Length: 159
Image (spheres, rainbow, N blue to C red):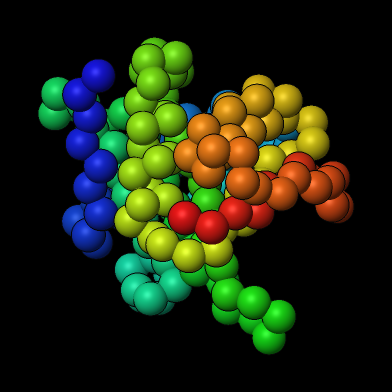
């Protein structure tokens, strides 16, 4: 399982934008979204902000053998109550799933951004819940909190 996690500079924006079409297609099973008149899903809001808010948004591209296979968008959220990292979007193309790449990438992301984390999945996305519970349980050795809030399953932990 060879892969490369690259913090995506601005030159990767169009690649992430293109891969986002496949991500939204996969995700359309869980949320109401359809392609627009041009046959494409609508643009991902705030994607450009990942290269403007450099202390709060962190885009990554995933490659294997010089092929793009996915991306990760990480946010750092600051509020009066607390500051924490969150996985905004996480995508591995289907043909590369079940090889351990997603788990390895997730753990690498947690190591790159030390601190409090909150990872959530839609309550209807059972496959994502199984993946994230397994990864986070393994990463934290069971030291995380799990809750359901606003139709989302949420895991809180420190990296």
